[in-house]
Image 1 (spheres, helix red, strand yellow):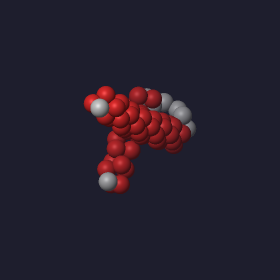
Image 2 (image 1 turned 135 degrees about the vertical axis):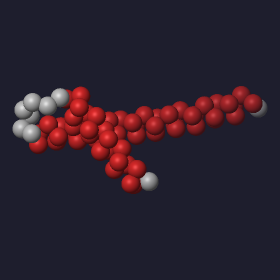
Image 3 (image 1 turned 30 degrees about the vertical axis):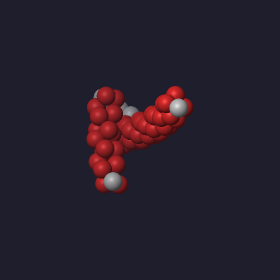
Length: 68
């Protein structure tokens, strides 16, 4: 009987893992969009895409903390 229970637990872990992956993908998409708008706000002139990403990441982290 231990084997079916282990299989069930694996399914739960996989479901949680899939949910985490989905959440991470959604968060990355939010950061990418925010970074795009940061670059757009300066007319895509100058700037540093990495810095845009880091700034966007901080903004999204702040937004998500407020939601929880």
